[in-house]
Figure (tube, rainbow, N blue to C red):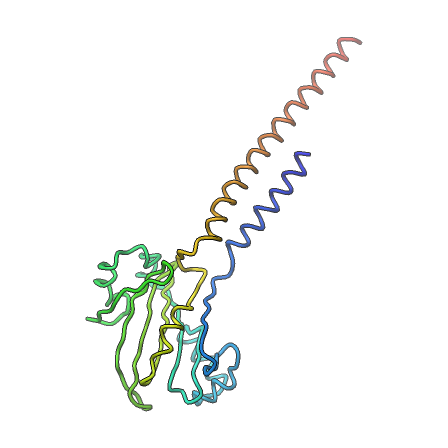
Length: 230
């Protein structure tokens, strides 16, 4: 009976650990006008004026793992990650106060003298930057949301013309398993179930050990009695 219970609880704990260790991906909900790299690399490479191989190489070399653009390339969305001494030291940006994040904006953004605002998304803090720039395609607005989560720099960037109305809804859909979140229904359940399952597992192990010891003593006592009777 004890062995069966241990097997059951071992499976439960194992399954819970699998859930907690889900792969650390990000997700975004973007308007239908956007072509997403992971869904249609051929169309996106055509919009950006490069081959699929060139696009693959570009994303790899710049640590971009999410890229999307609309049909005329007047809007782009990118998510890039990286790791450095700063991210390793901070671990998660949400651990810092807003004032500290503002003071560290140049270190976070890697741009000397830059300033920004602190915004929070379901508990995860971001440094928000807005800059105007230009390239061969003309003037554009760069909006970035930068955070550190699980020692990773995560940068969500929007390259836009005059239309920036889509930015806030897309940012609000930004999620990652790495982020701290205030939506704690599932996390609270896991935080309760995991310790309870672990304690129950330990209790059963102790019970099994005691039952084995008692059984051995009984068998030893019987053996001694048999010897005495003989």
